Length: 373
Image (tube, rainbow, N blue to C red; front, side, top):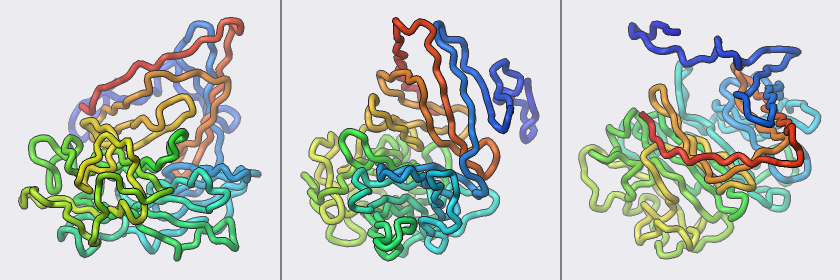
């Protein structure tokens, strides 16, 4: 099936005519996986919350309340209570802090939040959002992304204390797209993982991109990488703490095209894990975790998988991911995704039925090292 897109004939990538296309029944969207010997998998979506402008993600702290925290790109995070009620007042409101967003298309804004593993006791959460360009950044660039720590209001568990913000990183961006934006705590090591885009535009080229190889393969830059930091300590390891708001981030780099700038506060507001394989005497590479030629965006986690494995959306039609070497099937799993209907969050429910229960099967996910094409 083909369609005409801006004068070009391309393949229609939808599954509208697939025998496994989703069907809407009883206010639920249901589909089925390809046949797997011994299993039947019914997958559906249930509406959880609606009336969002651009829903991004859902987080839930381990605080015993059962609350969900839904992030909207325009700068707010709302609470969906344990009984399914969306509270009218935002938990977090950054609408006055974020860069002005284009109503037509924009990849900036409030991109994600992550709750500290000990949130029940310390009330700490971490936020990735796009602020207006700071004065230290090159002129004419797009924005400055903030990686910030906030604390919940001690007098109101449903509100963030907006005066508690500590900015751990300032990431200046030449273009509005390719921000990365996902924050997640490793379920085993407790470190905060931060996905950063390559700087924007397309194909890892342009202002702020390393000629020839791009930012993702340039280990002197933090763009196009996944960072790993210790928010529970301030040990900088072999990397000295920066002594000024700007730091020496452009030493030895060419002046044209304009080099990207960023400021991190390792050694004062957070620490660098001692086993980081990229730790060097340079703040530009100290927090990196293993890299690949792509820009990370989503970093799912699971108890039986490595802390993160990035899914990397392409600028055109193909995307790729690096999967864990091993995973397992569970009888019931639930995750929360931006809905197929604009402005909604849905619960994705997967029920896997094993026909021969005496012989449980485990599914091995083959590593996919493909890159964006």
